[in-house]
Length: 164
Image (cartoon, rainbow, N blue to C red; front, side):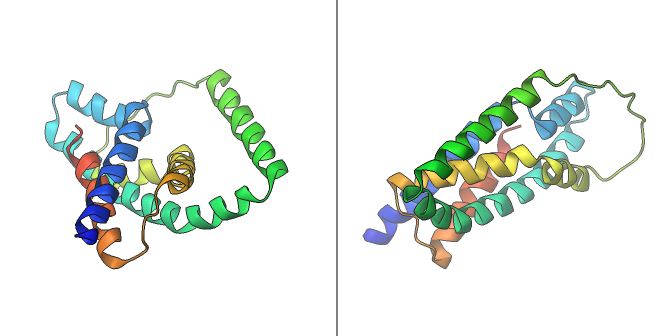
């Protein structure tokens, strides 16, 4: 009985975090929207599947590192303030940064690999997962066991793959 409750909570948490992360217009979301606009649904699905693979790996890394970070931050108030100010200034930097418009060339490429690459170079996606998991671990304990990790991955991959 306890395993079912733990797994359902882990599944719900992973879906919730992935849904919050999917709201923002990042590289992958805009690429999928562009492919859909150009009436290329297969390319859009392939990009989202490739990005979902990277999302799952970011989720795993954040889950493993989040517990260590959360324990360390609980004991160090000055580090929490420093990290908060750093992330706030990073957010302002990216918000006010002037975007350069570059002309895209049309090439034949693998959309799955493109989705993986776009998500891999999106550093803010990894930061999002790390912060989200660290905050989540303050409220619930996600066991680092094989069945919990599989359920966690299914929640992330399922939402990321089918959100488009």
